Image (cartoon, rainbow, N blue to C red; front, top):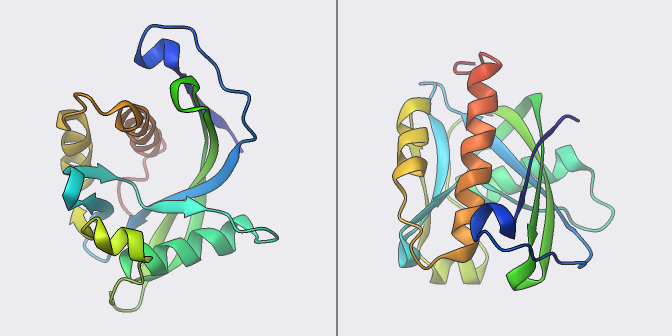
Length: 172
Protein backbone atom coordinates (compact mmCIF):
# COMPACT_ATOMS: atom_id res chain seq x y z
CA UNK A 1 0.00 0.00 0.00
CA UNK A 2 1.20 3.52 -0.84
CA UNK A 3 2.74 5.57 1.98
CA UNK A 4 0.76 8.83 2.24
CA UNK A 5 2.40 10.80 5.02
CA UNK A 6 4.76 10.50 7.96
CA UNK A 7 4.10 12.97 10.75
CA UNK A 8 6.62 13.65 13.51
CA UNK A 9 7.02 16.13 16.36
CA UNK A 10 9.12 18.27 14.00
CA UNK A 11 5.97 18.78 11.88
CA UNK A 12 3.76 19.52 14.89
CA UNK A 13 5.95 21.30 17.46
CA UNK A 14 9.07 22.11 15.46
CA UNK A 15 11.16 20.02 17.87
CA UNK A 16 13.03 16.94 16.67
CA UNK A 17 11.88 14.27 19.10
CA UNK A 18 11.23 10.64 18.15
CA UNK A 19 9.70 7.61 19.83
CA UNK A 20 11.14 4.13 19.45
CA UNK A 21 7.93 2.50 20.72
CA UNK A 22 6.58 -0.54 18.91
CA UNK A 23 4.07 0.76 16.33
CA UNK A 24 0.35 0.41 16.99
CA UNK A 25 -1.12 -1.14 13.85
CA UNK A 26 -4.47 0.39 12.95
CA UNK A 27 -6.96 0.85 10.13
CA UNK A 28 -9.12 3.77 9.08
CA UNK A 29 -11.91 4.06 6.56
CA UNK A 30 -13.42 6.75 4.40
CA UNK A 31 -16.95 5.35 4.49
CA UNK A 32 -19.52 6.61 1.99
CA UNK A 33 -23.27 6.26 2.49
CA UNK A 34 -25.93 6.09 -0.24
CA UNK A 35 -26.04 9.91 -0.38
CA UNK A 36 -22.24 10.07 -0.92
CA UNK A 37 -21.67 11.52 2.53
CA UNK A 38 -18.72 10.28 4.54
CA UNK A 39 -18.64 9.29 8.20
CA UNK A 40 -16.74 11.26 10.80
CA UNK A 41 -16.49 10.14 14.39
CA UNK A 42 -17.35 13.02 16.71
CA UNK A 43 -16.05 12.94 20.28
CA UNK A 44 -18.29 15.39 22.13
CA UNK A 45 -16.28 15.61 25.37
CA UNK A 46 -13.32 17.06 23.46
CA UNK A 47 -15.19 18.56 20.47
CA UNK A 48 -13.04 16.50 18.07
CA UNK A 49 -13.70 14.99 14.65
CA UNK A 50 -11.77 12.03 13.23
CA UNK A 51 -12.08 9.53 10.42
CA UNK A 52 -13.45 6.31 11.96
CA UNK A 53 -11.12 3.41 12.59
CA UNK A 54 -9.08 1.67 15.23
CA UNK A 55 -6.55 -0.96 16.14
CA UNK A 56 -6.04 -4.26 14.38
CA UNK A 57 -6.43 -7.14 16.85
CA UNK A 58 -3.74 -9.84 17.06
CA UNK A 59 -4.21 -12.30 14.20
CA UNK A 60 -6.87 -10.13 12.55
CA UNK A 61 -6.80 -9.41 8.82
CA UNK A 62 -6.68 -5.67 7.95
CA UNK A 63 -9.87 -5.78 5.88
CA UNK A 64 -11.71 -7.67 8.63
CA UNK A 65 -10.49 -5.05 11.12
CA UNK A 66 -11.73 -2.23 8.89
CA UNK A 67 -15.17 -3.83 8.57
CA UNK A 68 -15.35 -4.50 12.32
CA UNK A 69 -14.34 -0.93 13.18
CA UNK A 70 -17.00 0.48 10.83
CA UNK A 71 -19.67 -1.70 12.43
CA UNK A 72 -18.55 -0.57 15.89
CA UNK A 73 -18.01 3.14 15.21
CA UNK A 74 -20.64 3.86 12.54
CA UNK A 75 -23.20 1.11 13.05
CA UNK A 76 -22.79 0.13 9.40
CA UNK A 77 -21.80 -2.97 7.53
CA UNK A 78 -19.58 -2.04 4.64
CA UNK A 79 -17.91 -3.21 1.46
CA UNK A 80 -14.25 -2.26 1.05
CA UNK A 81 -13.84 -0.92 -2.48
CA UNK A 82 -10.28 0.34 -2.51
CA UNK A 83 -7.03 1.17 -0.76
CA UNK A 84 -6.02 4.73 0.02
CA UNK A 85 -2.63 4.37 1.70
CA UNK A 86 -0.68 4.17 4.94
CA UNK A 87 0.00 6.98 7.36
CA UNK A 88 2.75 6.95 9.99
CA UNK A 89 2.70 8.98 13.19
CA UNK A 90 5.70 9.25 15.48
CA UNK A 91 4.66 11.19 18.57
CA UNK A 92 7.87 11.62 20.51
CA UNK A 93 6.23 13.63 23.29
CA UNK A 94 3.80 10.77 24.01
CA UNK A 95 6.25 7.93 23.16
CA UNK A 96 3.68 6.63 20.66
CA UNK A 97 4.03 5.32 17.11
CA UNK A 98 1.15 4.35 14.83
CA UNK A 99 0.95 2.91 11.33
CA UNK A 100 -2.58 3.23 9.98
CA UNK A 101 -3.81 1.69 6.72
CA UNK A 102 -6.73 3.54 5.14
CA UNK A 103 -9.44 2.13 2.87
CA UNK A 104 -12.44 3.41 0.93
CA UNK A 105 -15.72 1.64 1.62
CA UNK A 106 -19.43 2.00 1.06
CA UNK A 107 -22.28 1.28 3.44
CA UNK A 108 -24.09 -1.99 2.73
CA UNK A 109 -27.68 -2.10 3.96
CA UNK A 110 -29.12 0.19 6.59
CA UNK A 111 -27.30 2.33 9.12
CA UNK A 112 -27.66 0.90 12.60
CA UNK A 113 -26.73 1.48 16.21
CA UNK A 114 -23.12 2.12 17.20
CA UNK A 115 -21.30 -0.67 19.05
CA UNK A 116 -18.87 1.38 21.11
CA UNK A 117 -16.50 0.46 23.90
CA UNK A 118 -17.22 1.90 27.35
CA UNK A 119 -14.55 4.62 27.07
CA UNK A 120 -16.01 5.73 23.70
CA UNK A 121 -19.51 5.94 25.20
CA UNK A 122 -18.14 7.89 28.17
CA UNK A 123 -16.44 10.37 25.81
CA UNK A 124 -19.68 11.06 23.96
CA UNK A 125 -18.64 9.45 20.68
CA UNK A 126 -21.17 9.57 17.85
CA UNK A 127 -21.05 9.37 14.06
CA UNK A 128 -21.90 12.30 11.79
CA UNK A 129 -22.23 12.27 8.01
CA UNK A 130 -20.92 15.04 5.73
CA UNK A 131 -20.11 15.70 2.12
CA UNK A 132 -16.43 15.32 1.33
CA UNK A 133 -16.03 19.09 1.13
CA UNK A 134 -17.80 19.64 4.46
CA UNK A 135 -15.67 16.96 6.14
CA UNK A 136 -12.42 18.51 4.91
CA UNK A 137 -13.58 21.96 6.06
CA UNK A 138 -14.57 20.65 9.51
CA UNK A 139 -11.17 18.99 9.92
CA UNK A 140 -9.27 22.06 8.70
CA UNK A 141 -11.18 24.38 11.06
CA UNK A 142 -10.87 22.04 14.05
CA UNK A 143 -9.35 23.84 17.04
CA UNK A 144 -6.22 21.96 18.11
CA UNK A 145 -4.99 24.48 20.64
CA UNK A 146 -3.39 22.54 23.49
CA UNK A 147 -4.28 19.20 21.87
CA UNK A 148 -0.99 17.60 20.87
CA UNK A 149 -2.45 14.29 19.64
CA UNK A 150 -5.28 15.94 17.72
CA UNK A 151 -2.73 17.96 15.73
CA UNK A 152 -1.36 14.65 14.39
CA UNK A 153 -4.87 13.29 13.69
CA UNK A 154 -5.94 16.46 11.88
CA UNK A 155 -2.90 16.44 9.61
CA UNK A 156 -3.31 12.69 8.98
CA UNK A 157 -7.03 12.80 8.21
CA UNK A 158 -6.74 15.84 5.92
CA UNK A 159 -3.94 14.06 4.01
CA UNK A 160 -6.14 10.97 3.65
CA UNK A 161 -9.14 12.93 2.35
CA UNK A 162 -6.90 14.91 0.00
CA UNK A 163 -5.66 11.62 -1.44
CA UNK A 164 -9.23 10.36 -1.85
CA UNK A 165 -10.15 13.52 -3.74
CA UNK A 166 -7.03 13.21 -5.91
CA UNK A 167 -8.04 9.62 -6.71
CA UNK A 168 -11.46 10.97 -7.79
CA UNK A 169 -13.16 8.90 -5.09
CA UNK A 170 -15.44 11.71 -4.01
CA UNK A 171 -18.42 9.54 -4.97
CA UNK A 172 -19.04 5.80 -4.85
